[in-house]
Length: 491
Image (tube, rainbow, N blue to C red; front, side, top):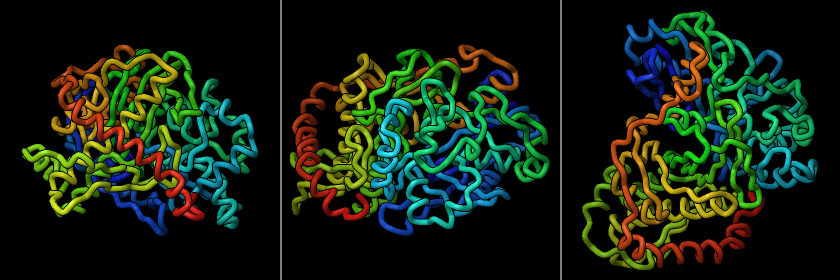
């Protein structure tokens, strides 16, 4: 038996797979985040540990007792600074925090070769600019930093007592030489850091440390079991459904929205804000187009419309037979945006409201707005790479076939829904643990999941969406300068 733990933004999810890698059970525990100031996003690492204990302890006790290995997946980019005693110095700054836009410019000015070394454009959500911001705005806290950890790697330290990361998550720091899969002293120096501040690196399917007895007791797991290197949420989610071969692609519909393509070699395109990272299996890389507010956009639309939750809103949209107002468009940039705009100042817009607009109209605008943003990301990915013919869909948003029809039409691509695709990174993390403990090869450890449903693009729906997507793109172009001007210091 193997356990996978996915430290997400809104919840910690834990799963069990058997010795053959088949799914056995899952459980989760919620997380909250704080926004101390506009465009800030933080969490307390101690809350991660409490939620992890709750989620793992909710798994069947008999199965937990048979666990032989643990894999970790988690939200990327978060900055967890710790001191010499390994105490957390300040709350973790998360991936969807926008305070470090100016720090990105400082970072790239200090290391003009950063885009080549890191294979990525500096963005506020990445880890390195956050440390530049801390040094400038919280110098006393910066002076105390002995190490900087990513969220799942702080959890690893809490479980196994060692400071370890792996290349897929480390790629999102801007401190990794992504081609070489090792820390870059030059990139670290641009944040005022050095190699001594970094955890050691192992591959995602390799052992990293073992579970300490006190942590084992809190989790209800056997002490001494191996903790695998694991992976970032996106890489582990891809591995969980077998997206590890050259050209394999997926669409993740979670708090953020991601189009992910596995590559046999590094294929960087930072100028289009395409992320080029290491995969969580050796000698493999991947590219991503990332939008920051995916299911979060639906959650906001549900609140605006006065609907109980996102699922209820989608059901209301699907049941509506009234024509959608032709000008009603939503820009889903609730926390800024990454691909293709790299605009931390961008914000959400609901355009074209009239007195006759209904709750279903608002919900449909939100569903379409996310689909249009994903289509922009697909265009960026394909501008410097081969065409992506189909995508496997995972994440919480994969539960809605109606949304899938909208997305398939907007992208003009076939969507495949793999079995257990809504489990996400926890399943991949558990399979990484199996690979680390039993030395299972990549092909055997990460088979492609059976497909439960396929959605083909609907040409009539695509034709109906096309004018609204054109308006969507024009609105961003018209408003980009005003977003920046109205954001003030945040930009």
